[in-house]
Image (cartoon, rainbow, N blue to C red; front, side, top):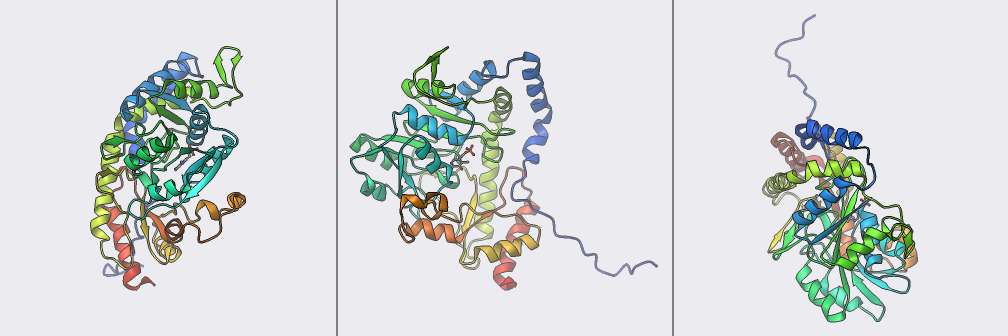
Length: 383
Ligand SMILES: *Cc1c(COP(=O)(O)O)cnc(C)c1O
């Protein structure tokens, strides 16, 4: 029996994944396959010309003099800290709201992370709170360019110089960001990048890099990524197996020229949300500090009921995330640092309220509209 032509057709809501890499990869599929085939044919899978070429291309893209490819963002941080001479007995100032890897890397380098609150204006390390946390053992500041927005590197540079501290950027979320004329990767003594697949520049697996303009830091990282070898069989310190894969370097060389375009697409999507979600419910939209060119790794809104919003969106096929629902000092893994709940109110508030909306290069206008409509529906009648 034919159904009535008048019956409304129930179309399922268009699914909007939290991240979709296909729009970025599809146009490059041939080039990526060629690059991988080239490595296979070249028969060199460790270091080699692809790694060196990517290193110089990425250094240039950041405005840094040098780049050392490594195996992950976590390793980039760890190697940079060790190459700067940090070790047991030293303290490293890091923000309380970041991915756990920032703290892990400091601890694995032998240092003790000293946590500091973030500021509401940019969600990054508060320079005044950092100043107050500096003690006789402090050796480095590690600001995190959270969600793609750079920390206030001018203030932090002045602070680091005043106290003779190293300044290391956790730039794992900020490829291509800038602030006050300083570029991510060239604003500290060293910077750590991750090329985890979903980062603004992502490999097809794990990869990372240290950028720096210091020869000593670069040489230190080059040695540490290969078991501390300064040259063949000359192990000056114990290191790691932490090289950048040649295959990933070849992939990253194909993708790097597209980073500015992808970041522009992210900024466009963010601008859409900023307009479509202004004044909706109790939402607080991501702050952009004056002089900051945000890389929009994530679009993180705040609301009093993040899990209810996520559930409502999830039921409509819309993927979301949380970055990050627990600040470092409240993670069981870092309880031994000894900070009580309430120690970092801005970080705790952000963690309790954050929801990350879908944002990726190639997200369709209809997908953005669907997200905005669903968020509005939640606040209109969804609760
Ligand atoms: C992704 C990320 C890291 C770690 O990078 P991996 O490549 O996953 O090791 C470190 N810090 C921040 C802020 C990150 O977002």
